Amino acid sequence: MANDIHIELEAAAFRQLLEHLQTHTEVQNIELMLLADFCRNCLAKWYAAAAAELGANVDYEQAREIVYGMPYREWKEKFQIEATPEQLAAYDAKLKLKVAS
Image (cartoon, helix red, strand yellow):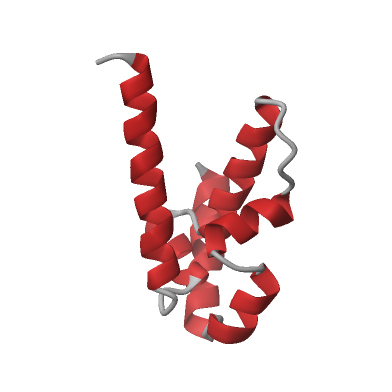
């Protein structure tokens, strides 16, 4: 497969992932972290890091707006709910396992 087609396919899949996450605001970042070991903020960090590698001027907050489809502050007010004690405990346990590995 030609490299330009490969890049276009990856970009299309990434756009679909962003659309899916922006549509499914009921899915909380803590749930993503527990199940997939990444969340919307991770995607924004990766996006900003890729931009920096390519010399593009996209900071973390700009990347979060791209990932969330709106300013993070707005998304948080509209959609984020407080993590439960069980979720926080599961996340802490997951982190401890990662450190022990």
